[in-house]
Image (cartoon, rainbow, N blue to C red):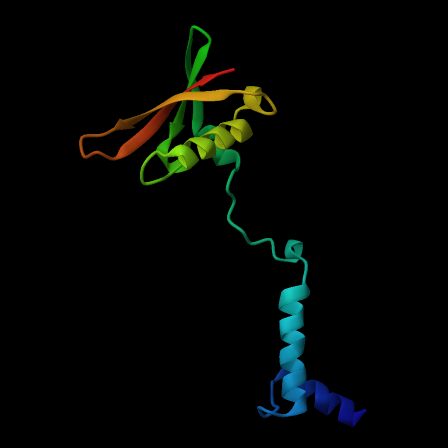
Length: 129
């Protein structure tokens, strides 16, 4: 029993010298844990879409079947609009606007509203269903 307690104490306090079989076994155990543990055990990812994202979108108007939504710039940040930016905006709207969830729609146009310094305040996104 005393030997078992000594092994446990040495393992917990990492008392084994490098290049010993006990040290190597502990390192293999740690690596196996990191690589084989299910991702759901580590639920520490930042939230991409949450309740605050839904509040960042508001309906502005509808003209001739084209609906305009205003999205705060902080919700979808990028250096410049590109095809991937438009796709990410489409996905963002599909996740955060109730009437667009599961619906088919197309982003027709995106307009960036800027302040005097050129910083983007929000985007007006025109969509067609």
